[in-house]
Length: 180
Image 1 (spheres, rainbow, N blue to C red):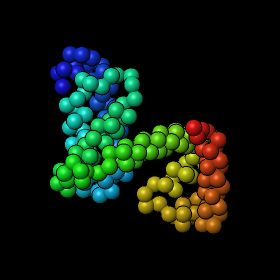
Image 2 (spheres, rainbow, N blue to C red; image 1 turned 90 degrees about the horizontal axis):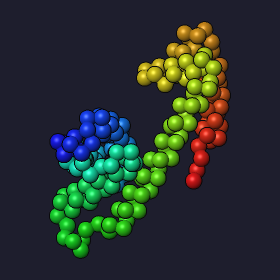
Image 3 (cartoon, rainbow, N blue to C red; image 1 turned 180 degrees about the vertical axis):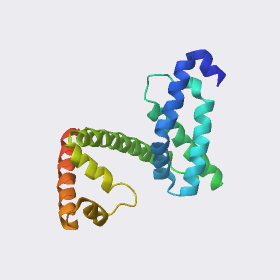
């Protein structure tokens, strides 16, 4: 990656590494939406990461890293499918279809990011006691019955409180998420 270091310096290299780490989960979901097989998704993600590193100096810092990474992933999906299924150029997947799916996945990712950001904001707006209740409920292995016992309340009362909190959160998220 010396070309990238020479062109942008150490600070941008750190930003590039952070960007790759930040989009891993999203890239996995994006690739899966195009190939629909877990093993293929892992292979394409690995190849995509390799190409991202190889082409790091072509990325312009400050631009939309995820869009750039998704475009590379899209080409890796097409190359992988062509290789895997040994397709001739005529038999190859319709690139217009793949591009349409890729664009839709990118739009979905933007929308999901906006909803995630809204959820974080809405959670912070909850009173601390409510936030802790939600956090505890979504801790792996925690049941409503266990929470009720710990709180000295009936499970039905805890469930109803959680339902009300979820309703408040959903309303808040809808208000904060702008659909373009």
